[in-house]
Image 1 (cartoon, rainbow, N blue to C red):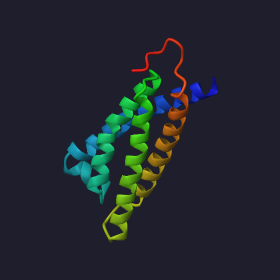
Image 2: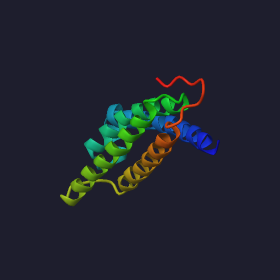
Image 3: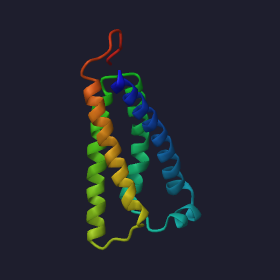
Image 4: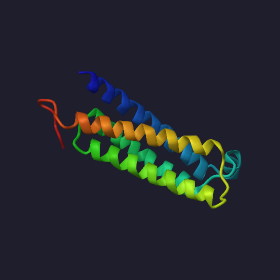
Length: 135
C-alpha cells in the first residue's frame, strides 16, 4: 500500500532527524563556549525544546515503523508542541529578542514535517495490519 511506504519513509526520516537533532542540540548545549559562539544568538527555549524533542522524534519514528498505537498520538504531540514553540519564538522576535535568521526556517520545516507525519500516521493507524502488535 502506498500509504504504508510513505509512513515507513517518514518514520525513517523522523529517526534520522531525531538523531541529528540530539547530536547538534547536545553539541550546542554541552559543547562549551566555542560551540555556543559558533551558533550566535541562540534562543534557549527553542534550543532546549529541539534537543529534548529529538529524543521523542526517535521514539515516534520507531513506533511508526513498528505500527504501535502510540505512534499517531506522539506525532500529533510533536506537531502541536512544535507549532507552540514556533509561536513562542515568534513572540520572542516581536518583543525585540535577539535571534539568528536561520532559526526562522527551522521551526517552519519542523512544524510542516510533524503535521504531515501526524496526518499520515492518523490515517495509517486507523486500520492496523493483520497480525500486528498495536501496543
